[in-house]
Image 1 (cartoon, helix red, strand yellow):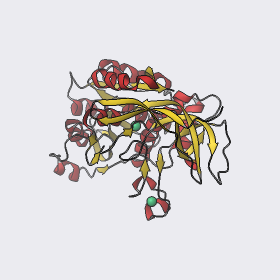
Image 2 (image 1 turned 180 degrees about the horizontal axis):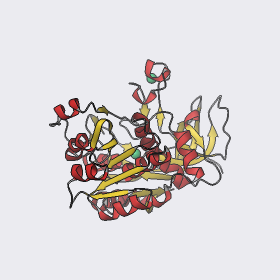
Image 3 (image 1 turned 90 degrees about the vertical axis):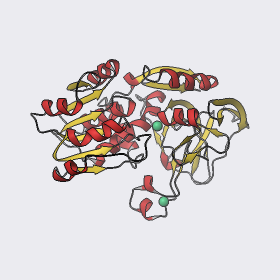
Length: 349
Ligand SMILES: [Zn+2]
Ligand SMILES: [Zn+2]
């Protein structure tokens, strides 16, 4: 298939203003490949940029293509690319780290101060027909893994990284606060690493139902029950070995300390909208809990793809709605208005 010079893209101009426009097809530089997009996820961050034009210090100052959870087909190789060929089906890890700084050299390239990332201003993302990717960040999909599942590898990588941060291991009890997309992939990652008690906490009954299907052993409906009391009751009064905060709410972030057992590990995965707030510090100190932050992921695509291919992790059940590229504005509106009812929305090109 010949590659066009112009392509369709969904471009964010200002809050609540996304337009389908003709833009130039990017060219792959040395070490990069051009990928024809097939499936792209709608992430909470895309919806935040759509609604507010910013996330914290990341501000959209000039028109930007949204989307960073993508999979597609390699259509062109930049100079010097080895190990990939035209026609390969790939999941795209949407980053371009500098590869020279200390973080990059020690494998923590997610912390690289110069990393470029899809749909993180001012860099364009994946709601378009073609996008370039670093060749070693385009991971081949096994035959039994679809493009839709390939797009889901991005959020899954976050859940996998969260479990890495907490060193989740066999027999652990893990409380997951929030059963949205990131909560559900974190839950499944913990299960894949051998955690045996998986407590899903959410205020939404439908999300809890899906959490149960995906492996939760215990459910806590936080709209009816006290989260800390329930998690303690379900863990014989001790609290969980690991607490994953994925809701990104002030309340659940504060509750994470109470849900952890003495010496427990807490990972703050969700990003609260408030910069700073009160935390039960003394309780955290005397319980000797470890609290870890998390920013994206590093080196998590290969194990994530492996777990999806083996059937150990089910990302398909999380896909609830699909839109065409032309309908990205509709998809973002839908996500904004009814996000609670949809777990994962995908864009098909
Ligand atoms: Zn995302
Ligand atoms: Zn770097």
